[in-house]
Length: 150
Image 1: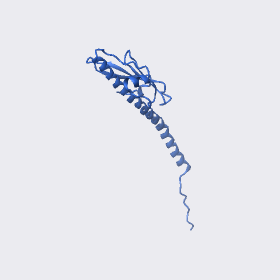
Image 2: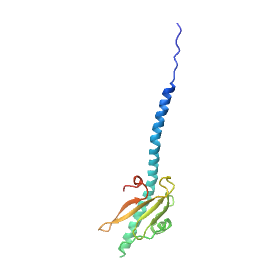
Image 3: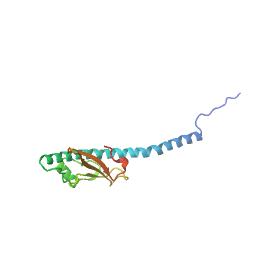
Image 4: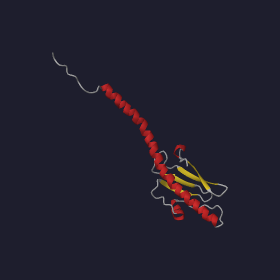
């Protein structure tokens, strides 16, 4: 009696099924990964804006202590923010930042993040409470999913 040779390995169908499963997983994972990287880069900008808002709050407190009422700084560009408020924005993923003196809104223009959000803005609007404290409201022209919650 002759011994039968058994072949070891995978069939072409089995390999094609594995490749198809990997393709489906990649099609789902890559867009989610891109969204999370964009959110992480925007979080970096949000942190910088938080520092600016703290500096604006201190500025208004000092101006109010001197009898000036509610006064916001005049910072039409990033250089003015650094010189007036002492907040450096050199390595942040923004092309422009300003603080409007009339209403205290902080606005940054995003850059070097993703084609979907580059050129759009994120804003922080001051809302003054009855006791004189300032709360901040996020806004801007980026999609709502990218705007920080608090």
